[in-house]
Image 1 (cartoon, one colour):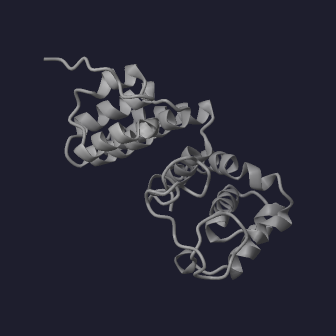
Image 2 (cartoon, one colour):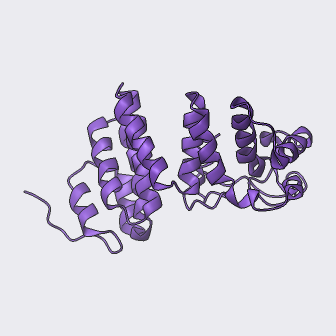
Image 3 (cartoon, helix red, strand yellow):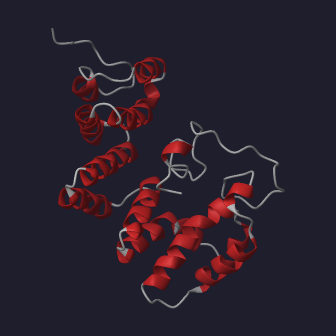
Length: 233
């Protein structure tokens, strides 16, 4: 018998209609009931869990999120998840088409981090640079001298941008020079206690964000699904 139950509060009915017959992980169903306002984040995480046991359900859930997630950023992340799954299946042309769609639509900062690393790893430096410029837009609007105030994680997007510019044969600009100078004296990320973009505090004064805590980059996603993901790192 088809489930015709109404969607939990704050979950769009079209999204609920598309996913309620899927065999979602019980933990995510509990979280969805308890925190429907976090439906997009909860279901994006469920996609990754389902990939390990039911690729078809993972695809279906990601497609539902791509169409009906409550926030545009969540729809973009779902599109990226679909592209990753397609590429793993050898459907590179379809994956590339989705990535081009994200680029054309203007990715938000969190998605741009993932796209930049993905594109750079495949040697598409021009598109990767475009994504790094999206991520670094706020920092590039500040004087280059402010780069010295960033900690290791805050510097990482600027380092990626500088590397892409170098790979493309571009002369370093003032922010590139400030980034390289700051990189030379900052300790490795694993030696840092904080993961934000604020000025460097003394070591070991703040705890590392938990994987389920909001990412310090401001994307609105959990750390484990944004700057704390293996791809973003």
